[in-house]
Length: 351
Image 1 (spheres, rainbow, N blue to C red):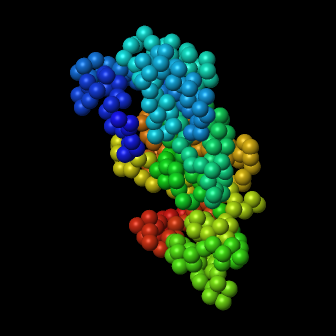
Image 2 (spheres, one colour):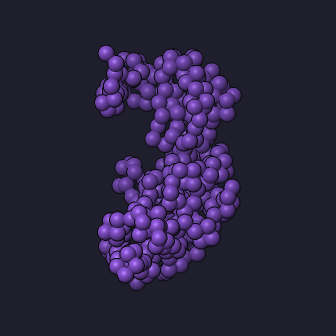
Image 3 (tube, helix red, strand yellow):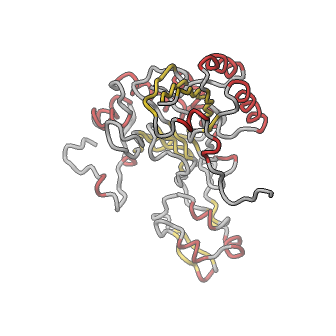
């Protein structure tokens, strides 16, 4: 009988035999070298070789990767949540030949231990309809510049970088050590004809998180209260007549200090440190330089195993701005009316 589409297949049917046998019975893992982990359990050991990969890949690329898995790993591999490829093999003699074969195809091995993780990102100009900046283009430029940190193990702790191409935050930009976020800076340009023809006005009004959109019964359209607009672009999702993209004023902001890990300190959200950098494709030099500068300042001063946010909390945000040379402005002050717990209202706050 032909199989039907009734949901995702059972993942357990695709696990490596060694993983199946050791499921729930692992003893420990060892960091063999950047990009290679050895997992030891009651019923043997298995190696995972992590390879950096773009998020957007071709079918030919996938075929090449599968050929490597067939040749060295009995066909077993997996894709991680940060778009890495992990080859899985229980044969230790296959690890070095696999690494050599990956490097011959231009696939970098790394991203484990105290290293830069693969940059997770959103769609950007290639697919999304509301981006303020590209995603894959910026990630390519930044990763090229920081490449040595991916293939080495020399940082104080792991370093996660994320890219979200607008404030809707499809990526992990709210919880990464360094986050690059596309920002709009102008209100939507209303096309009343499009709004009248193809928009459900109540839904358009209701979609605005700050109630900046108001009905305009006279024109059978809407108006925008500029003082309330936060330029998120959510309205464009509801109506093509709410154009938010602005080639002259869109750009990126940089945030730091977020993490998901519970080790040593609780998870935390990232905070903005650079309000705006311009869009300068194809290599985004201002953004690339800013990210490298933040990495180098943290790497030269943080203690062992100290994530970027933990380092900043130890030295204080005032000291962070001094060390990085970033100018503190009114744009850094959190004035969101529902975030009183994050306010810095003490008289000791220098800025």
